[in-house]
Length: 381
Image (cartoon, rainbow, N blue to C red):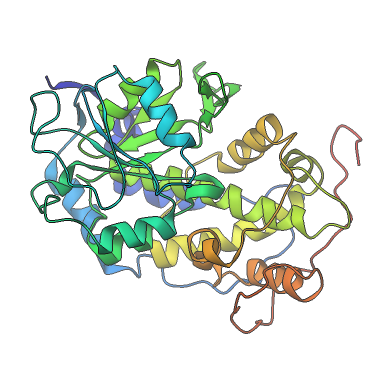
């Protein structure tokens, strides 16, 4: 039941056959200043300063893998939140299944087999604070040999960025399944796809943004389940999944922050349309932090994708900042970027937001914040 497809990560062009060269060139090409950029004063850290990330990349090159092994969808375990929690994602996964899934709550024992198989995906549809408690109190039935079947979810204001959480528990590795859910639009009738078509690239191929993505052992099973509901999902290697997840984290954190400090309610689409200079200034600083501290280089066209998704899907989404409980999973990872941190201080000190959050001391540098808006090429202010 295993089938393979060519890996997009190495087949886009001849250049992709040399990943190290491509990643170095990407540092230059992906972050060319836009016409409206002002000088950034964010201090740079040494690139590749994270030895663990370098080691993971070297292991990936040494493996020689160029194809993904995709396991088909099958009867699975869906772990719902405790009673009274948000079951929207769990119910959507059940609806897209084949009617043979098993539903558990935190604290329930894991069955030995599901539909006659001892090897099956375990979808954990818990928000980060709930996930911490779940992983700290796993029943004995969740033995170490069963945990490779975990499917962790990330993305959006509910699930955020759980990379640091998983690292502390030893679950961040290329075989562990992780699922970026932000390409799903939830509704009372059935889940729908909300990925965005950005037109065609120079080679005449369609450009997509905001898709779901999955990596690890059960990436094919996740993609197949979503395809039943006509929802796009990209099965990718772990390195590519990290880039996609961090790109989404930037969208959720930065655009909401810049919109939330306005005098009147502002939508995500409005931020993309009228405050794109502020977004670019902040994201430019964050990209340096990611390259230096996380060994992550956002891929070419990331600004187009961020703005495209926000304009298409953010018309009815009012910008807001999350509470103290979600702060570590949405914002904390960007505190080293001066422009971002200055905006956070402004939100807390001038707008009364982020109550209960202890921010690092404000650092000098960074661009002036709270511009009134940007004059777009189409003449709209």
